[in-house]
Amino acid sequence: MALEQLLILIKPDGVKKSLTGNILTKLSEARMVIIGAKAVKVSAELAQKHYFQLKDKPFFAELSDYIQGKIYGEPWDRVLAFVYQGEDAIARMRKIAGATNPEEADPVSIRGAYGRITTKGVYENVVHCSSDVKEAEREIKLWFKPDELVKEIYPTKKVKEIKEDRVWA
Ligand code: UDP
Ligand code: MG
Image 1: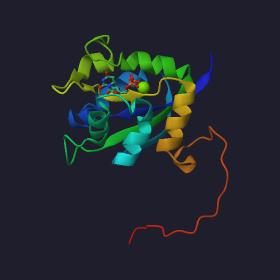
Image 2: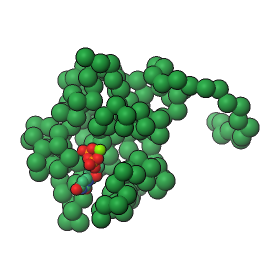
Image 3: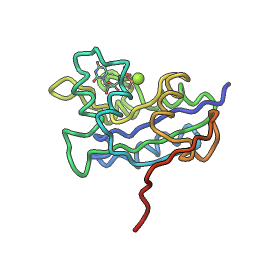
């Protein structure tokens, strides 16, 4: 058994279908803890970085639009991002999420219960779930800054940055 962490995203279709509560309830069956959580408007750059391994696939442009929520528009063009931690978290959470193709996913998994395939062939499968330890580390570092997590999970360093910051007026 290994203590692992992973990135979970409730994708824009999950947000639009008002599934946030159902998804978090299903995930909570695994008794993992949330160590980071936020709502994110996904930029084209973040979408492409997140799915860079799939950049040569014929559906890459549609996938990038999907994770940005472009097809839904305001107020659904966002995702909810979570970092979960627990024993064997990746395999256990992926089991609850279900197979990538919602038609093949276990019907009581999140993707099996709530996913669909669009007429363009994109798997709208409601959640993203990191698939191994290396991918989880890359994705968590892409989506979260160290101070956005309530626990130290990877080494950090201090840098002096001179930049304008936005504060409440
Ligand atoms: N995807 C798709 N068609 C495919 C394969 C993947 O639309 O034939 C989408 C789907 O939304 C999936 C995402 O691309 O969740 C990332 O694919 P990956 O193979 O990494 O599957 P996952 O790790 O999400 O199960
Ligand atoms: Mg994947």
